[in-house]
Length: 341
Image 1 (cartoon, rainbow, N blue to C red):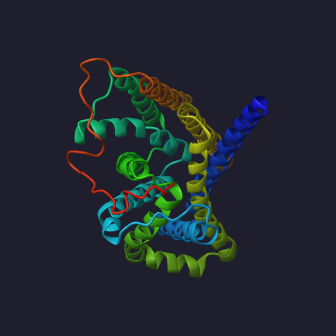
Image 2 (spheres, helix red, strand yellow):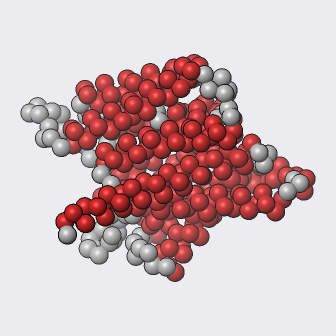
Image 3 (cartoon, one colour):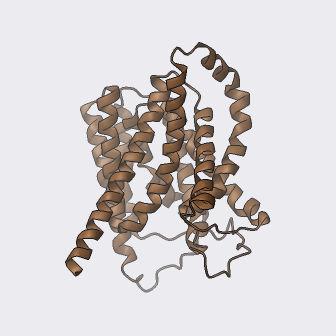
């Protein structure tokens, strides 16, 4: 009985990782295909489609299919707590799509691996969070690999590079803000999307119309295969929502170390698949830099896990609860309810 249970656990973890990889890589490839092959060079509009599909998907999952119970949040708390995170979430998605328009998937994914470094530096600078020296040491190969990859990238584009780099900063900020909302108040990813996606749509709709509206109208009037192209664009939005759900599933089905290693292998899979489809040139040193970065990310995850398993040594500075000093988030009105998931 125990052996069967163990086998089922392993199978469920494998299934969770594979479907997460599939959704993640497919969304990345489809977005790149939209920008490069369909000539739909409007990252704000693509992001807006993703948020609209996520809003609809989260509503159906909670209200119709009842996959998760709705966590009721007071309207005032939605503006004080969820709106700022939605704004950062919006910036993160837009910057990712902007970088995909200008640089290859392989380069973009390698730069995104810089996120652990930006998270640590941001928490240290803004919230004065203490980190063991081994954490700082584990960032060295990540930074070194990124530098080597950037210097040797044959399709380097400064705008795409900066968008991906600032996207790492936005991801780190979103992660830190979400730490309180997701863990301290037991929000799950579906409820998070349910509240954040409509805000993000509202934030992005006006800039998308003002900056890209005329270009989108011209594209709709002149594109030769309009029907199939619109299906691909809408499908990328549906898959973007499925990706959010798959992240929730994989986090609950694997350990922290497995999740970290699977995430880095996912980057390698995305790089390989994108090269097979788009055939973007990759120099030898560029591939070495990418490998060093992924190994550094794996080592970083291992160090974080090992340190979390042991008590801090005597004299270790007390780490404030994140977020604390500069941006203390107010508690939700319904904090005291015990039936939240």
